[in-house]
Image (cartoon, rainbow, N blue to C red):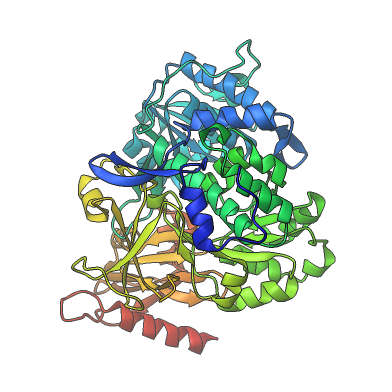
Length: 592
């Protein structure tokens, strides 16, 4: 074993150690679906392996906290084992799609583990969707079974008879409806101590997660076991990399250094248990890739505790931070902003919080300064990733972030490659603005049932993000805009076209355009301008009610402007949305 270093390693030396043959996180090349990618050599085969790892090393440690409910890793595993055997008895087969649509209840986590344990595919549906959207997600995915809570059941039951869909309800209110199962009954203790025996192909599908694209309905992003496991290992590696480069906890740095020389035999060594663990406040829904991957699944590897919230509320979050001794907070900038601006911040003990990070949308640089002033003990951080990349992309934290608050960081080592390309796919140089393209073995397999969209987005292993940006001389990535018509409202991606389709279904609407307006709290909000058919009259509230009857509340335009003349157009014949945004900004300023 080499002698431990006298001080922190440079980034290059730390990366060389991480990628080297002696490291449990060694990297090698492998051809997947005809494309050569870098992968972790000693990585777990599938997510079942990670669930087994956590039960082996952390069984007695608390894992999920929800109100007064507290579950250890071992208890979660035992319930998930029972649920997996129940799914098998219900004839759920490997490759079948099983949907989940509920709040962030502990049952959500148990369902994920059980579905993956029988080789089925998890389909986490947006719990803010309304009936038509849920109907689409269930139909498009071809789900044969669904775990839902009471609120989602009330929406689904209206069209359930048209679907060949088994349903189990978590936390029913009153008697369980006829023809529907109680999820609690499926988790009754059994004699089985392990998952049903099964061999899983590492490149088989594991998750289909829906994301709003620039056109039409949301697209189902297909993630394989290999995609997710490599993404999780890469996230785990980020923490180890930073530990090697820091000079605060010398014992932890030396522990990581020695572990990195342990080779494949050290892969099952629960190093996170010896380095200390986090207690993380989960503020993001599990149907988001950040909630599903970086918060929930990654905790199986690190052994950290998750504190779940019934619904986001900044003051409730502060109460939980104090009560549960929260050490880490992750969330979209809107949530973090509400915490630091809360008048109750100083009334709660938040001294144990040592890490605040997130992503999903741009964080105002002034937030970074405020974090330093109000929570000086907490290292700020942010990241950039997509559902299509299994959340990996770029990351930045600590002093690097404080010095570059407008950056989303460096390409996430060691797997991720990022290039900036022009419209003809030519690679651009430093500080040249173009489309951000990402390649790693964590990239999605495809869009479910959408080969043309897949071909447009996934090219020779590279994801075309639709985001515009540049890489500076040091490799730091800066996002400058979007090439596609996507509004990011408080971390939620919203396709302008989806709302426009609904607006055109209104019998009085002749022309319409949907676009964004800046918002201090949410980053962006949805706005629409409509030009009515001759002789027709309508109001902002009536138009909003029409959208609300078809789409989730967060997609309803915050402002609807009724135009007195046809909408302006650019030379290509498309609506001039920049002109409409300018008109909207002037109107909103006048209202204020």
